[in-house]
Length: 88
Image (cartoon, rainbow, N blue to C red; front, side):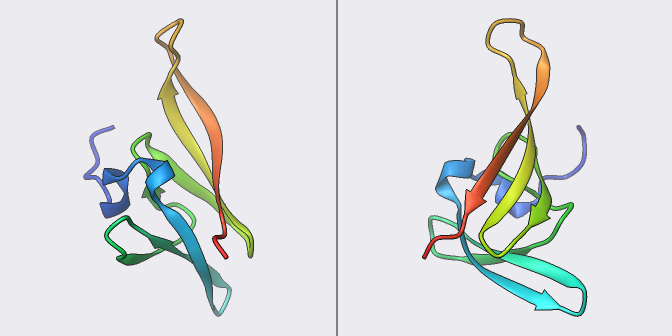
């Protein structure tokens, strides 16, 4: 995993908020707010959160991610599905 980190990978997932949705043509972009109140646009395929979380889907109510975490017992790297729900 030697690609450069994207800006939202610096934050733990629990510190990010899904605050809105933009649709342009056939593309959907989630608006993600960081703890310093900066809003970032993300799309499917972007990464966010500290656990290599790749955005897999964006809906009106949530952003779905596939994270890679280290299993506490075996030490193996495993996939975990996570999501950010829209903050009203």
